[in-house]
Amino acid sequence: MLGIKKDDDDETYVNAQIYPDIEAIKEYLKSSMPTKEEIWKLISDVVSNVNKKLPNYKHIKNFIIRDKEFEKTTTQKVKRYGNNMIFKDKKN
Image (tube, rainbow, N blue to C red):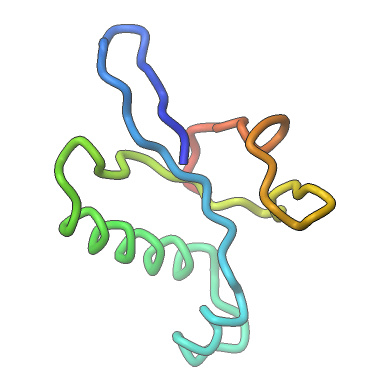
């Protein structure tokens, strides 16, 4: 999750980077290889359901689906800096 400020606004918006578990998605969709559109739709539905349970200021306003796993430390924790902090506003 990243808080991103827009130039024309004083608000900070919650944005997420998601690295999906393809095996779990395959099992859920009962598909041998889901398309990018199917993955996007499924994750979009999950984000929408999560947003319904959160106050408005905590809603995930935008997200990207990562192709590569997050960089990790030697103890396998996700690094909170470097390439993990780059957020490119794109859908696929």
